[in-house]
Length: 262
Picture 1 (cartoon, rainbow, N blue to C red):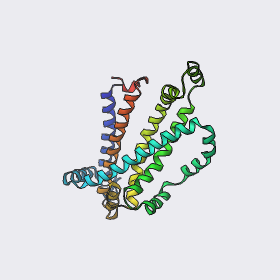
Picture 2: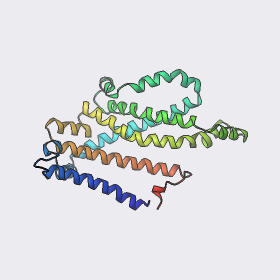
Picture 3: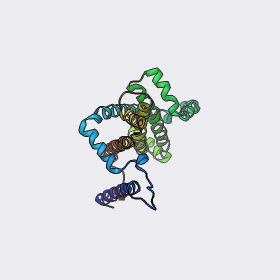
Picture 4: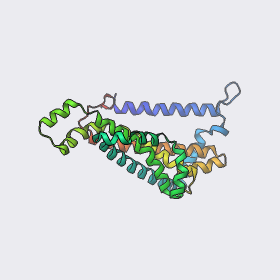
């Protein structure tokens, strides 16, 4: 499938969903609106609110705060996950010792941790970054760990027979094996980094998209809530596009997906 056709189909899915939303909120079916505007707003009102947020400049401050928190959480969590994932995969005894503790920490609900981080780090950006890091780290860590463990013993044995030392094994065997797993986790963790930032802002902050949505909810401004959600969705798509671009540059050896063929 060509990129143009794929993009067209993706856009059409969005158009159909918006059309169904408009029909449900504007057209009575058997005398009843399926999506009452008081609870679901309307596409026109939400679009107008998004335009107003950008036109007045209100959104920029909040967008910048959320972007900073998301970027820091994503970078710190991903880097930590990559480093510890490689280390634990190469040190099975260390991994065995810490395995129950990692599983225990990973099982903790992040919403429970948010107030604790706010108590420790205050209501500034770092409590939101810490929450995002706890979400991103474990996703990347377990994928990188598994990617290194999945290295074929035959490939590894042949590489050692050819005289590769540990540094060369890391560069030519372990790293390529883990890259696909790593980028798969990075695509997922982008959204979780944003979730950590927004949830932290929602629970306590003075700026950010989560704060903006929370303020709109407080006055039953459904259009404002949906506008904030759409800005968040667009935000995630842009970041994910950046991750995909970096992935394509680093994994040039990977067979091309038929969906991306021109």
